[in-house]
Image 1 (cartoon, rainbow, N blue to C red):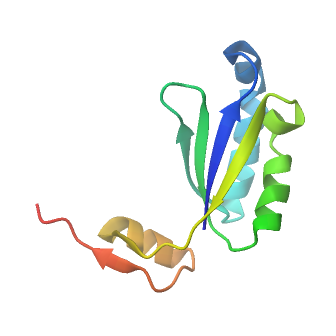
Image 2 (image 1 turned 90 degrees about the vertical axis):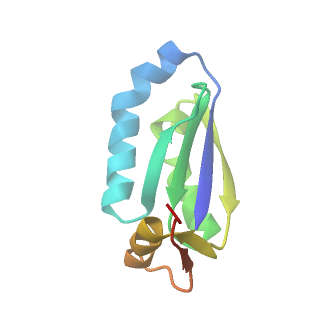
Length: 109
């Protein structure tokens, strides 16, 4: 599993102009089962994507196809991790994406 940290390198006007193509990139990778969660950083200096997989080179190639990256408007930092625990709802979703061996911890409230 990967946490993809996207950092904007250009102003928000240039980022916003690329958003329709970036959304297509996100949707394609959701449909292919690679992206599991995404959203903007707060404050809006970039984004965060949770991605399934265990091949860092494959993830690196995917990030290079992002219109933000191709336009020089953003860069990715790729953090690989091995999930070991998750809440019940997230654990079920991760298991559905093929991840095994995650300890499920239920909230007490």
